[in-house]
Image: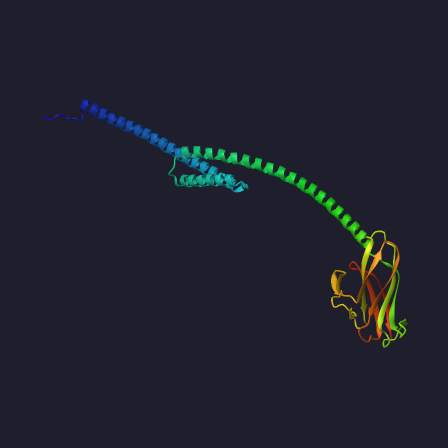
Length: 304
């Protein structure tokens, strides 16, 4: 005979107990799931923090290396050995920077190497600054020496100018001068007497007489006096000697006649004659007297 379970109190108790167990199990399962989700969330957060930390560290190392490269761009020196060393350090920094950016290098190791490279760079900064200060001191010293040399040179040039001026005055003072001078044309009479004339057709020679003044600066002794007779057409009346060239006023030219005069620093009279070689022209003649390349005096006369 079948039993009626619907009205069986034991059966109802077992069903309630099973349902309660199921609810408890579900609740525990949810708690476990919630805990696992919390743990997963913490792991994700930690991972994100680690990624952020690594990224930040990578950026810090990258910025440090880039700043060092920028600093090397500002370091300038004329020291060749120092320049070679800095170029080598710069190349090492560039290589390390490339590896850090690619992410195939230990950041801890890269950071350590970057710190070492920065210390080396700071050493170069100190060295270059010291060299620049030393160069500045040397430059200032050179400027001082240059100024002193300039002053000495200026004094020397001033003394040279004074010496040249004094020598010029002495040389100028040594030039002979005349106190009187006159010139004119002559012709010879049959009795040998010389007669002055202003007629070109009669003129046979030119006579120039003068008095050399007193001069205590010039050396005493024989003086060679040159006479140039310049005709109206500008030509120099030729001397009888074919070798009639001498230097005067820095150039070389012809003279018409010359003579020796013994000069003893006292006034002395002298005359120089030019013997004609042909008929003389009408017009004005200029007679110049030279000694030691300088003009002593000049005179003029006219022939009709």
